[in-house]
Image (tube, rainbow, N blue to C red; front, side, top):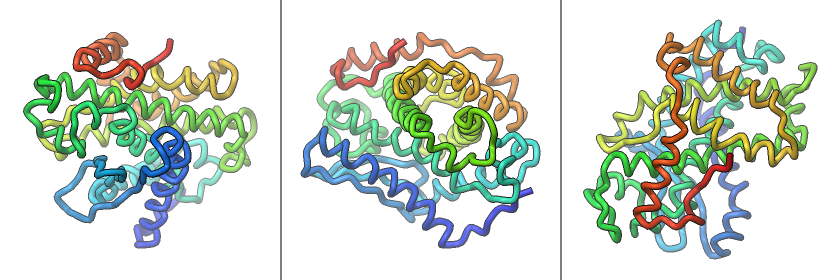
Length: 311
């Protein structure tokens, strides 16, 4: 059984390097889209009163801020995933390397999701639409500047769902690239069979504690927090928004990869906090995504800017 590594300054430097590396990988594509003068960077706020990642723009600089308190709280879930025997025994990578602490690998997949969600508020035009330089400004606004639309919870939830869809598409594009380039063999070398299925099962498993923990942390974001809940993300956003992107990226519709990912979600739910009844048996209504899309279009968001799903 693996032992959790000490959370030393070197450990946290490694996690931050993973986040910085993700920003660096985006930079080339973002500069092509938005011009060479735009600057993208990431900060890690030490303010103990800040819990929620945010994105802000000042002139030509776009900054994603990931508070250290946010990382510390999420890391408790990472440690639980390593130390909890039933959950740990479900991780394919842990079977290949039973003595290793795979915390950094878990963080790598979590940060792809978290950072892409924040980036979406810039990329999908949310900041531009509301004439604000900071997503936090909109979260506490009574009205949306420039639109006159009341910033009611349903409208804010639609924006967060739009950001989730973008993040899912970006994440599954990244997963598809790793499958196509056979990069999974670097991590899952000792495994036999279709290595991508082992990896995707693990990622589905990893996303369950993340989505649940983000839901538990939501009240700390403030009273206006309206992010989709774990059910919406696990049973709606991921399977609906992500998999067409994955299949297009690998060049074929490999259904066994989809089933491996969903099996990971099932195992994660079954082994996490006794919540099987509250998620697995509550279907997600796909109409929620279309309703959110229509609400955003009614506020003046351009169809080409709004993140869309293809079924």
